[in-house]
Amino acid sequence: MKVKRKRGKMLRSAAILFSVVIFVATLSGCGGAASAVPAQQSSPSLTPTPSTGSITINSLSPNTATAASADLTIIITGTNLDLLHTGSPQETRTLAMWSAPGSQTSLTVTVVSSTQVTAVVPSALLATQTSAQISVQKWFKADDAPFAVSNSLVFTVTTDPTPSVIPAADTLGAGGTRQFVALGFGNDSAVSWSVEEGTTGGTITPNGIYTAPDHAGTFHVVAQSSPAPGSTVTALVTVTSSGFVPTGSMHAARTGHTATLLKDGKVLIVGGGDATAELYDPASGTFSLTGPPLEGRLHATATLLSDGRVLIAGGLGLTAGLDGHLLLLSTAEIFDPETGTFSSTGTMVQARQQHTATLLADSRVLIAGGYRGNICFTASAELFDPVTRTFSSTGSMLSERVGHTTSLLASGEVLVAGGSNGCAPDSSDDPPWDPLFAEMYEPNTGGFQEAGNMSTTRIHHVAVHLPTGKVLVLGGIPLLQNLHEQPPNPSYAELYDPVAHVFSPITGLTISQTGYTATLMPSGMILIVGGGDASGTTTEVQLLDPASGVLTLTGALDTARGGHTATLLQDGRVLVTGGTDAQGNALATAELYK
Image: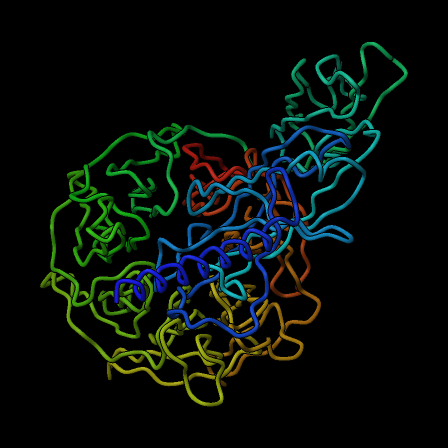
């Protein structure tokens, strides 16, 4: 028996050694900081169900390098980049994939946060001129396929850099500012700046900070090499009568916060990774602390009640639980602008975050959907009564939803559109996790009913209630709906008719960026601000004419940002606060559109 046990150990050791040899051979395709793509297995492995959700990348910094460069660390920003496999989070691997003609290589990655990872591009990949696609993938162990894959962004390896100015063209409002950067002059610090039109066209500092004049026009910013005066590059600046200018900064950097216009014209800022609250005074252009709130919150809702107070409900707390996740909150509190204090109010029936809150015509507040846990969403809804200061259940939606919108209609009903259903499929004719159908909440009966189908599913889109009574729905179209492709020819924009209960497509209207805010202006135009596009977080601002579907550039943001708030002030200006910049950092700055 002893001999048999010894022989069994030897056989097991040989099998383990053989497995290690195969595994090492599989990974030995590339050297340096890169490794080969995980080998394909002959049969799929049995793994637990992965986390629902998708990962998206918005920017690479830098996104170019000169041939023959040394190892280069790039910053990749996006959303959900810390996604873990539900079945075994500790065995989740994050890879950045480098795809160039003739090769596909995984890069060494460090997960910094949900919005940022870093990846090392080895010098071997930067040896010659090429153009590569970089994406982020999430793998479980050595599975045969990733359970989540992001979009791809382009990284370019060039030979001789061509002198350039970034941005090459921009649109600013009167008095707006922009940082210009000169590249490819050999010695970028030895560059002199000027405005071709002189002070009529604005001013620029030796460091390239341009300030637009107080009048509209087209002007030219010139970068000239000091060692070689004949080497110049010009950037085009269009100055419009309207645009963004910086205003006072908040006391804390915030994203995932709320901004609520009060009846006295000030704006209440609450939460966003900080346990403070502050008030913005449009008259002085400054922020001052108020409160403080009873709890710090992320992704809560803030609703201006009919009596001028503000209801703050749900969200994520700022303290992690035993599972490492931030605690989901069922608590709520009310801000009283008369006293500048917060007080506790009733507890919600369901703890939730990223839900919607809609003030009804009878002064109650409808709370709907959102996350009910770390992964799954809820179809439940409840009502807050400001008289009794309590929450009570009402009818449930027909689908779980998060990333949806709610719009109060003239009839007193509430239109619920879009969102993701990540826990269970909907009806048999609907793609799982992505409800095509909209719903209508009837306050008198407390029930939801179907209210027509959109041409496509939408997640984290925007909905604007127009003066005509119709609702304009924009964007939020996912590339894939889990295992289902998008319906053919989805319309980027649709108009909902509350009388006919139908969505009608708007042809020819597409907005390149995602994650922007859309604010209905007194003129009837819609202000589209910031977000991200294929090149990363943007400063771009556009005006949309909902009648014609025409987009027009207007004065850009001073700072590129996404995840910000946009609040229409009583004087017609728009206050933009916080969000994240191109590197994924939370911002304390604020800007005014006028």
